[in-house]
Image (cartoon, rainbow, N blue to C red):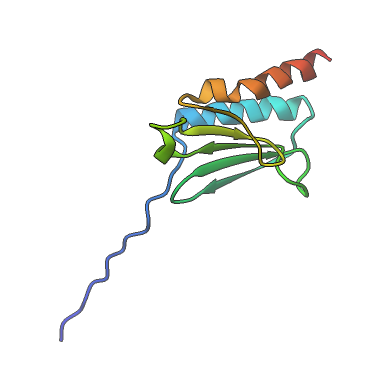
Length: 111
């Protein structure tokens, strides 16, 4: 009798590396401290990794930061998606894609 070994291959997932996640969570923490965000969710799929930030847990995310490595050579692997699904910013680097949220944080802190 022979035993067949089934390949234990899970499909590869896209994820955030430590520096990317640190940058995103730093912004999230500052938005929480400003009283604007209250919850977040992280999703890892075969095609994308998504960080979603919520004002309240029962609604749509106010912003989603998405990483799509397949788009790296096209419009950029990073995208900032608004509450209604509109793409607010795309780019190759995370920092410039987060810039609209950073500017909004400055207005929240000053006001």
